[in-house]
Length: 285
Ligand code: R5P
Image (cartoon, rainbow, N blue to C red; front, side):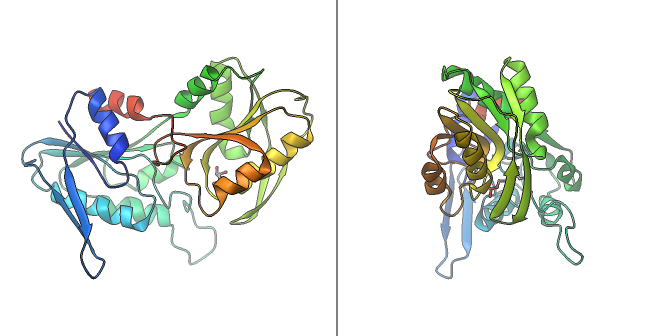
């Protein structure tokens, strides 16, 4: 098996390869003078089973994924792992005339030798049906739960900041016998939200707000306000995908967040929890 990490998932790909006892395949990539992308796989992969691991955080990441798929034309089979799939939040028609971008992107991931696509904690699972091959979503939340427990916090309490992650947070909490509380969120626009959470007895407790992703940090910052106002001791944030756009890191620090914990579906300094065991386990099968 050949494991190829794209430009955005080099570390994760190396971790997966190490768990599978495979030397990762080296790719070369750069830009032409006109800024177009160039990509080359430096080994012969003809007739091989190839795994491509590439998160699509930026549009350039999508281009690299298409180039990788194309460069694998001579492979026997290809499995694509998209640990973080960009555009996945535009998963339905919110207003007439809009592009359903998640569908548009899923449809473009195609090749004759493509066997399957794996994503991790897709924002909305229904996007899977738009891939033109079997597609599966992996759940990294148990890895975050394990990490939280390893911190030895004081009576840790998990918060689900909106409806979309309630099931995930409830599952994490029940597996570890932790308390959890759901909040309600209304999004006013891309960067502004209103949140409510009531009946909290959290004085002196350590609280961890868990979401599938942190983008602008608006959701987390609102939840922190409520928690601090109700006497929480230390407030942490945890997410699968640390998008951390704009000034999210500063915003969360300014709101009094003690730490941002995240997985390596997006490779950032906060990505201390690796999804490699999850991905390697599936590839082993
Ligand atoms: C929304 O439904 C997601 O689960 C996240 O809550 C959201 O994407 C986070 O975005 P932001 O950090 O910009 O509030």
